[in-house]
Length: 244
Ligand code: ADP
Ligand code: MG
Image (cartoon, rainbow, N blue to C red; front, side, top):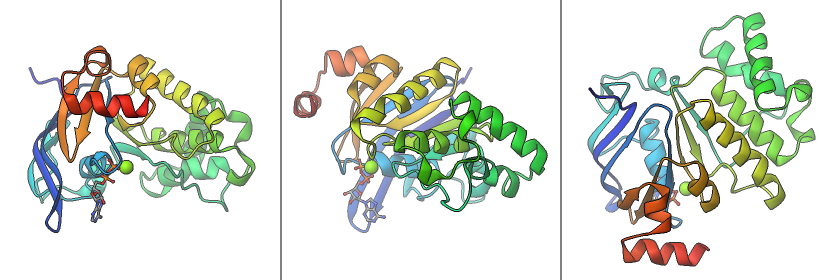
């Protein structure tokens, strides 16, 4: 039986004549945390954007919940509504309070009535440890707190898959831990995640699978013990020695 939530097969993406992803095969099972690693420019963000249908792949198939989402007849907004995407820059609306940010899409995109949206939003803020900040403005929060709000905003609609693009890269070093701890807790609760990060400690401790990308190809893929602890490819070893 096919248990995968997400599967990429032979995915290829170019911008002009620049091939950014080629022959990408990857699968994510429900409850897994899959971590993409690789140098800047290796294609990690593009891969996440292809999964989220923010980029159209040139070739290959992406299957999500058993359905080919690269089929041009697929409604991209509907697919995106079943995924949560969080960026490095949390992009909260400064004029809305925290609960307003967390519930906005729930109300406007998912059509949840304001009372229920508020109840769900408050429960989600509780889950990320920020219930007492519901009426604060984003500017009054630390970067780590703002990123946790952005994660709450993505989670509140019960996405099947969370896509997280370097969500700790913009944070001061002392704030990185609280966001990584939250991701670890979400993994413990069964949230399925595909993410890229330079935090190798997190990858080692939390990931089920680590994929090393170089120039748009997955050069090595396996458990953290395999890829981080005993890399087989020279390129993986070189990358890891540079970032450690
Ligand atoms: P990473 O996230 O691993 O740093 P990216 O996926 O952002 O890598 O980028 C991979 C390559 O694709 C880079 O060379 C980048 O310049 C290029 N690229 C990304 N997005 C675009 C775009 N919209 N147009 C042209 N080139 C792009
Ligand atoms: Mg990137």
